[in-house]
Length: 117
Image (cartoon, rainbow, N blue to C red; front, side, top):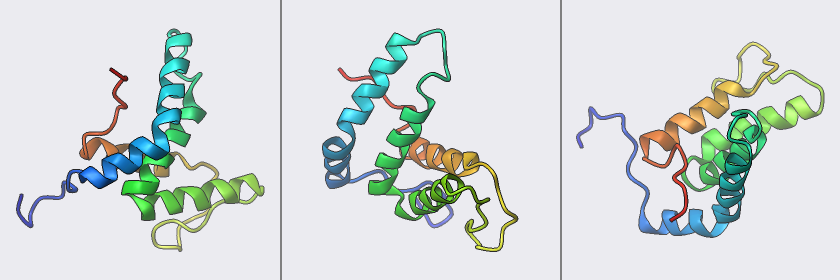
């Protein structure tokens, strides 16, 4: 891959081991939730976001930090105005940060989450 490539590097063995240690129980719970709710794609949404954040804490610290600040702001009842540039218009949803985590993990070949063997 050259300098023109925007694809992030593949996770190292150490990063994959850290993800396995930290996020395995969340990934397994997400799998169980999906199996228990095959007709409801939204039933496991919060669990998926938590799993995304867990993976992101290992591989995408900056993006995960922005997402966490957004969630904390919304939980306090305030609109989030601290996006990437810090001068963004206030937001009432963290969906775009969740989408950024999904895209980053997808680019690394880690999303959608693969079922256990």
